[in-house]
Length: 200
Image (cartoon, rainbow, N blue to C red; front, side, top):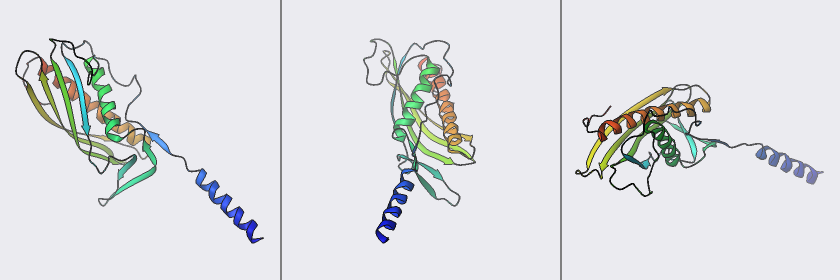
């Protein structure tokens, strides 16, 4: 009898464990979410690596709690490392706004200037039922146009309201990344055109 009871308890325990479902999230929106650029630029661009705060650069989603604590959601994960997720989402958004593809690591067309984008995310805050926030320092570097290399460093903070569901929070981060991409693309166009090194 005791042996039978032990087997039943073990089976029940295994059944409970098997019901745990891991959810995966992405910062890349659907293909129709980003606006198309009106005309391709006269320069080539490359998106360099994105640096993320180590506190949130985890496989799991990390959400902020009241009182300055963080919760790591073991069964809610990014579909790729967060730095890669952010990089890919930002790249696709900038591509859509510039009307050209990211050529990082690819051969470049000789004689055409190249704009490189580097992003250092200082804060990536997620607060359920409140907001998604990204605080980033980003730089533009222009080279290959027959002129000395020029650089411009900017700082942006974007905050988007978020609902109480994790999907709401992820979508809010998607919108924040879209806002950052808009600022980057517009600045890159003006910078490459020599219209002045002004941050948005």
